Image (cartoon, rainbow, N blue to C red; front, side, top):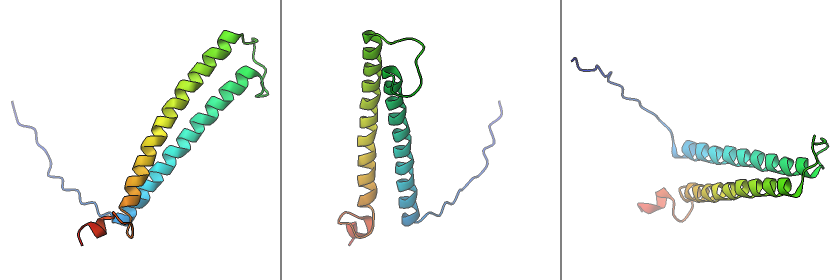
Length: 110
């Protein structure tokens, strides 16, 4: 068997701390936007079942249908809350590396 030939790749990425902070904040913002869309979809799901969305459902939902939708929305919102907590931790970590904060990288080595 022959040995695989692996090219010598030495990627040099030059990103400043300011640029990395901006990228991290943008990623948090995009995740927040995605969570907002999920919450809006869950609200529309409830509105559809209750009949306040403006679209008439084909069948009148019974109490078990409403409870099933409620349970589904509750589980989804619990997952959204968990993700929000993780994003809060991520934001706190990003803020801690900003210059001028008490725990920033520039102050750790003084």
